[in-house]
Length: 321
Image (cartoon, rainbow, N blue to C red; front, side, top):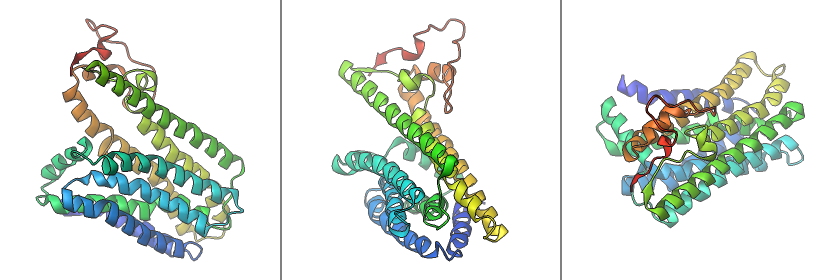
């Protein structure tokens, strides 16, 4: 059962990649992207993880793999097509934003310790009976590599086809993406300013201001919505190809787009996102339990009232650093 659980994502990726590679209009792109992603992950994650024992280097490889997808869209696609240029730019901006931060924090400043979410992964490996940590590191890294080479590449590959188009739906998707990108960036800036102020004051508090007042992970929500925007941006192209492509291939492509939304939600909430982060936050900050009771975990919304005996400032209570 444990082996099947570990192999399941690779089987999904293999089916999606085979379907993409069977399309004559994107086959070369699919194969080249597979080689590019393997190279990026080997250099940026697999080798450093083997040398240091830190899985955190996958946070360097994954966004730079997205940036590489953006470059390939512009190389393989028609630069006269607004849809091609837009999708390429979206991948580039998403990848470069996260990739620049990862390089600065983990390579230039030298990563001092494993990130909490990947320390949490070791608990899962132990629970699932995976005894070899070195093997588990490499398998987990390749799961993210496989996603970049298959499912997460679907909008990129569609953008290079002759039928790629924007239209009213595409323009709405671009507006949604821009708003989601701004939301994620603003949430990260608010959290960074809050953390810097807490360090100056020598206190440990839970950030519950700005966007963080309405969601415990507004940056993750913004990132998820960017992927949903990419899916929406791809729908006109899928609709334009529906009558020409085999029905099974069209259905698989549409299913792959839906899978992107689900897998990114699962990743950002359960896999390496909210759940692992909150496991450690609740231990480090005594006020975090109140924050959890008053604030939605993922989807932004109004705050819930505190229970009897809890003060309105409880979620921001100060404790010693």
